[in-house]
Length: 219
Image (cartoon, rainbow, N blue to C red):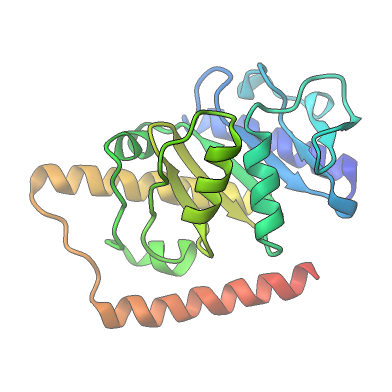
């Protein structure tokens, strides 16, 4: 993906995040992997609903500026850590959606209660240990919690989702929020039941095949 194409997609996904009510104000961030260890990322202090391609910042792995006048997102360390750990990830979306944040605030994992979670996200959506916002500690803990899955909750903070590109990561974010909502509402009604172990195993195999295909495509 060219720098211009990446900046356009990052800005578009940021605007969609706001439209979908996954963020409010200047919260949340989006990035895209670029060649040569670079990434395009939303800037600090800019409302997602007003984001334009001109606002997107391009930085290297040390967060040194390559293109753009604004400061990169305060959560840039988390994005750098995920790209370093996951060669099959080309886009990252970090949201502050209400239900995901509520589950993260109580430190709960969303168990595999709907099939889409396993096939698309890789199974349960785990919650990280708490780390101060924008710190190296939170970046490391989120990376560890994410593992090979495509979504994780960030303790007392929000959620993060990954994909082949920012659009795919946004779709994973939407599904994560929907799973969180189903989990919260079903917990009010009664006690949500998880999918049978054999179903989780077979659907996890489908996820792994998709993940391997994505990795090959990005090489």
